[in-house]
Image (cartoon, rainbow, N blue to C red; front, side, top):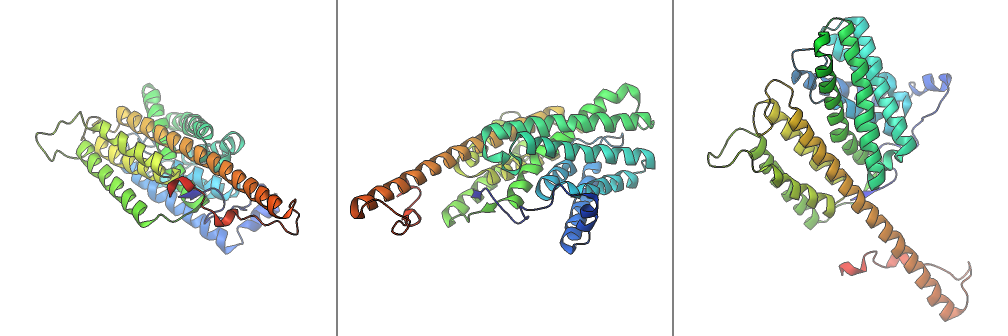
Amino acid sequence: MDTPGKGPVDAASPRGVNFRGFIALYHKPKNLFLFAVVVISYFFTGTLGVALSVPQPGATPVWLPAGISLAAVLLLGNWIWPAIFLGAALINFNNGIPLATTLGIGVSSTGEALLAAYLVERYANGRRAFFGAGDTLKFIFLAGIFGPALCATLGTWMLTFGGHIGREKYFLDWRLWWIGDALGILLLAPFLVLLLGHAHRALSGTDFGEIVALLVGLCVICVLNFGPPLISWMPRSGLHYLCVPILAWIAVRYCPLEASGATLLMGGFAMWGSLHGYGLFADAGGMPFLGAGYVLVLSATTLGVAAAISEQKQSLETTLRAYYLTQDRIERETESGPATPANYTSRYSTRPLWPMAD
């Protein structure tokens, strides 16, 4: 269960600092460690994404580093941007891209993360974006659509200007770049922000067993949908809808963290199978646009439903809290006169928050 607030990553991470303070941040061992973690994570996931890319360099249908970079800026602050730039530059330079083009792509990738994080902080409630339906919708459009479109425009132009892709394939590569970044952001960024940026209440044994069963069932369905044929008589085009009830169940029954984890799992299976020629959206050529659309729609819907349910739970919790506090005050005023600071103590903490569950 998610509790909005501080998580493993300090909520007081520095954001707006001057140049001297910016340099001083890198003298702290903790910040140096976080810097290294971001660079290594970016490089590792980027190398994995390049392995799935089409023959043209820079274009990949799933770009998880986009999600890592956005989550890093939201969780740590703008000071982490050099790690994003370094990770992007290392990936492109390692794949034979000339230095000038590598630096340009690094700038576009860094700008995407900074712009998306600014828009989410400014208009979508920052790290709390996934606890409200409206904020989640803003996150999807601002960070998942607008930000990747800008990065795709700059990055594809760099590759075209450098002669690495033909001008006639500009829009094809732009679309592939945009979809890859959008998938990386919508699949990975919410999970990382929710996991590392908020406190969590432990699941009960029953709830834990239930979520494990749901995730195992989702894996089985995804293998049947997006894996190699295992059962000859099973239709290959009529089982994709079976992912929907499990995702909906998790979104309604649990919190945004579990919902985002389920969409990450489903998206991983779907894109892997599609790129390897399996399932309804098979495209071994590296351009599974239908599969990407399927993943994006299910992911956005699941995150939106989970946020709406979380918003309702928070509203009900606030209402119940006010009810209990009011009831306590009325009882004390009835028993010992009007409540004063000296004799008033709320008994809310000893009462169950959800009495209808008894």
